[in-house]
Image 1 (cartoon, protein in one colour):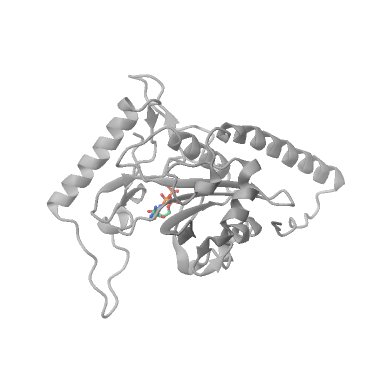
Image 2 (image 1 turned 135 degrees about the vertical axis):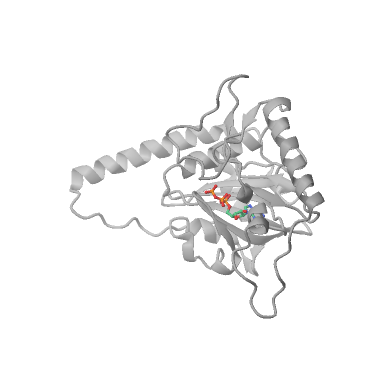
Length: 285
Ligand SMILES: Nc1ncnc2c1ncn2[C@@H]1O[C@H](COP(=O)(O)OP(=O)(O)OP(=O)(O)O)[C@@H](O)[C@H]1O
C-alpha cells in the first residue's frame, strides 16, 4: 500500500546550502526517531487489533497493520488510516478525519470519534492524531506510549493501539486509539459551553454522590500511579478535560503526553523544561 504526502512547501530566501543543511538535519531527526521506536519492538500482534487491550505497532509493522485494516472504517470510509497517513501534513481538513467527527483539539493534535471494524467486531474509538509540526508533539506521543505500556488500572483510559508510520516521502503519521468515552470529559460537565438551543435538553448536572465517586476514582488511580505500579509515574497534567467519564460516570484518567517516571519519594516533581508546559489550571500530580 502506498502512502502519499503533499510535497514540502517551497522555501523562500533560504539558499541551497541552508536547504541542504535542513534536509540533513531532517534525516538525522528521522534516524533518531527510528531508533527511539525500537523501544516498541516487544509489543506487537497487529492481527489481533480488534481484541488486544494494549498494543503498540513498531514502524516496520505499520504498513502491514494498515493493509490488514483496510477493513477499518470511519464514518463509512474504508481504509481510513491509510488516508490519514496520506494527510499526515495536512490532516485538518481530511475526509476521513473530518470536522463532523472531531471531538476536540489539544496542544499536540486532534481527537476524532470513529468506529473500528474488523474480526467480526465493531468498536467506537477516540483517535488522537498528533500534529507533528507542533514542537513537543513527537515527544508527547512517545511519553504516552512509554507511560501506558506498563500501567493498568480500572480508572485509566483504556488505550487500544498506537500507530506510527512513515509514508513513501518520509512524512510521519502518529496516532493513539482509545476507547471512546460517551459521556465526554469532566470539563464538559462542570463547564457546559453553551446554553442549549431550542428543543435541546439542558446539560445534565452531576449529583453529589457522582462527584464523590469521581473524586475517589481519581484519587485511586493517582495513588496507583505514584505508589503501586511497577514504574511509579507522575501524570503532570491533571485537569477536568483529561478526566473522561464512562457510561456509568466512572472517571478514567487520560492524556499521559507529559507524564514522567516518579523520581524518588520526597522530591518535588517538575514538568520537563523543554516541553510545552502543562495547561493553566492543571495539577502537577
Ligand atoms: N477517549 C476519549 N473519549 C472521548 N473524548 C475524548 C477521549 N480522549 C480525549 N477526549 C477529548 O478530546 C479532547 C482533546 O483531548 P486532548 O487530550 O488532545 O487535549 P486536552 O486534554 O483537551 O488539551 P491538552 O492537550 O492541551 O492537555 C478533550 O476534550 C478530551 O476530553
